[in-house]
Image (cartoon, rainbow, N blue to C red; front, side):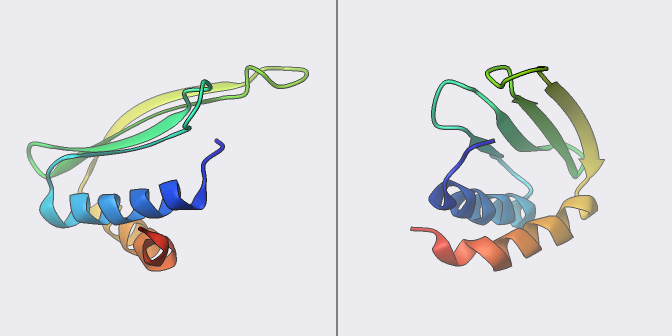
Amino acid sequence: MDIDDIALSDFAVNLNKLYETLSGSVRLEEPYSMHCFLEFTAVTGGHIRIKGYIHNKMGVGYGHELTFENEVDQTYLGCFAKTLFADYGKYAE
């Protein structure tokens, strides 16, 4: 997935906000035609839905593709969101 540092820092800030408020949706996506993404959405019951699509169809040789969707308890997101925010949140605009 090809993203820049600003996109990652914005994602870190917004993911941390989603964790703290347990509302909304946060998406990290390539800014051009490959359409790879990672998305976190707060759903009822204190759960977080995680969806993603990553591929290298334009690569040389064998193509690889990963599509996933899972729902986890909010507690699984805490450490990840806080660490990502601590490492990259400071670069947000």
